[in-house]
Length: 164
Image (tube, rainbow, N blue to C red):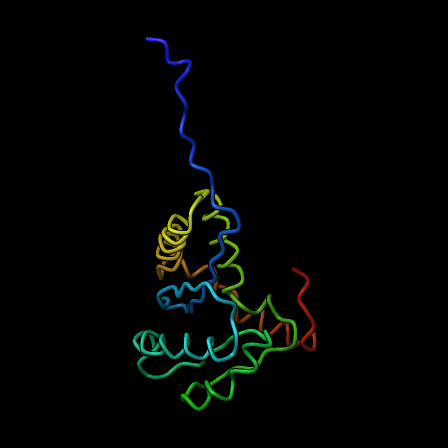
């Protein structure tokens, strides 16, 4: 049978598929991944965190300290989060080296890119699958292993960015 005249159907990837994510991690585990489409503003950020406070309390029933970076949206939401009863840690102005989740986001992006999602649904499923894997407590320990040492080093460097 001559198939030279048959057309091959190729699924074209949707261009500019973008989803945003929020999640919290700790040495004991993580919250579920919150996936959203809109740009993040202070009120949206506050609502997302509020939706996940119960999960954080399950990980730390005796209380916990919530940290985030100095993204302007995060700073704008701090008073609302404190009103919700969250104890906050303040970091130096530029401190990604003190935030374990920055390395985790990098790992998540790398793994999702390896899946090569072509649609929003595929992207969402890939994000959820890899978040579940990398946030298992046994997989989170490397992100927290030398954190105390990095904090001490940052204090010695007067809050300057660490050289790694």
